[in-house]
Length: 199
Length: 199
DNA sequence: TGTACATCAGTGAACGCGCGTTCACTGATGTAC
DNA sequence: TGTACATCAGTGAACGCGCGTTCACTGATGTAC
Image (cartoon, rainbow over all chains, first blue to last red; front, side, top):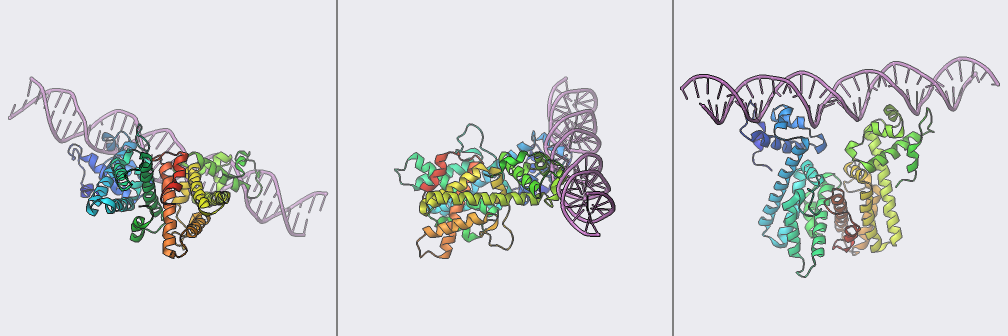
């Protein structure tokens, strides 16, 4: 998911990181750990341990654990947005593009279970409408635009909004049910969201 | 949600509980605590404290913390099933009944956020098909039957199954987005699931 | 009815655990003169 | 070029915390004779 995954195992040394390097290494390590385990089990100390640095070193780069997690969220949101855009492009836009977007969303969640949960449970920053932007900024904007484009041109704003939320709910619900092993994670199930009455 | 909510504040005493009473009291206390806080923050010690009993007393009734949580799940599943059935009856069955069922599902999640999350994250018991029964036994069976009844009679088993899962995903996704404050929790949003193309 | 005893649901003290965070520190780097 | 010094990203020890669980125990209840 992240280009510089390999940098995780860099050996630490006094002043061994160039400016900002340890920060990135901590984020990468955090993302990797989230790929293997649950959010609740991710500890600041473990992230530091993984990078090979003392726990207190983390505090040079993040005021507290919460900030570290926020940084992981931001990284995740960008990755999700990127994969959505890529899927849209590859499918060539329009309805197929929209469907590909939904599938990419589910695939992202399955590939990054804990990160995805973290992103969803970190509520959007204050001052925004609850369904506007937030941690999932780019991804949600794209969704709304796509939904709007597929509705009849005389659809009201409220209708567009509702359709976007419904689409989001379907795709999010499917992803969560799969993550929680309530629904099989097979490819056919993922693709089925395009065949349903919804999308 | 539970008939004997009031029994939580019973004063404990040596041998003060009749057979099985403490067990129920612990479950009720657990459900109450889940109504106020997150699952991760629910500790065995806190449940015992709430009931007014030593932490070790819990081990007379549950082998470990996990078993206590399982008992809460079972209680939750029954409550959810009951509220679904009630909604179905009240709306008089058919499509309106089905829609009411979906709304009741969301309302249950909103009223019992942590319990609902716990129920969903506790994977179904082994040996069952992933989308068959599990912790949510009654509720899911009802859903599948209702969906099947609303589809054209010549629909295949696979189609019925898929439609049921889609309906579940929509309603579950909406509930989760609301719990995570990504979507406003208003009544209109809840009712909108009936107006969408899905249900 | 009285006595001896088994049962078993409670008790409080204690365990080890990993956590987030604070603290005073060290020592390499970069800069000013 | 050499020297003095400020900066600041690291260090390891220590803190208090609440947790789940184990332990040996106590004492009321129910039962057999």
